Image 1 (cartoon, rainbow, N blue to C red):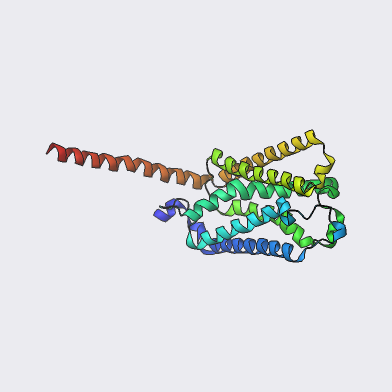
Image 2: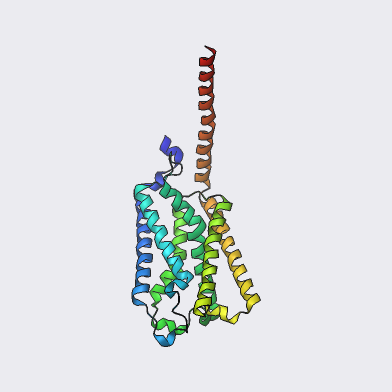
Length: 270
């Protein structure tokens, strides 16, 4: 009866095995993409901008995001085996808490930001974000892993694995810190390397860059809220079960305290 109340049957059997397989495929492909990019993708000197060597590949948000996705899906895989995917476990493992927070604050909004921004700029003018000359050294499959699969696997993840979003203040604080760190890093690269990481920033004047960064941050916040909305929409039933279980636990706690207080009072009277 307890299992039917928590509706955790989808975590077992074929469904549970497919979720584990999806996490394994995602963790392996993003990890391999990072390894391949650092090991085999090297731009000839004539294709590099002066100062472009500062920061290496870690200049790019795409690489930050690929590392983030590899880390996130590795944590998902570990949680599958040593944590829990139950809706309302009696004790929430730390790895499950980390997994749930990472998707909400980092993995989902950053992945969609990278994917949507990249392909939008590619459609407008690819020379501003991924010049055609790079096709000779940056394989097409790697481009899709870095800019397409990140979105696909994030959508699959939010649709197949239950999580409770953190408080909005906590989630947005984490996302804001992450994006602020990257914006600071962009300016560090510009100061010491003498270039803007993305060519689109070269064609913008100072007020336009400020507007670009502000719109990017607002866009990230919008993506966070979008992820929260879809999560609550997809997992409405499970979230109600979690609230019911949490509420039942909260109601039972005062009863225990009252019983102890009554017993203590009785002993004092005696």
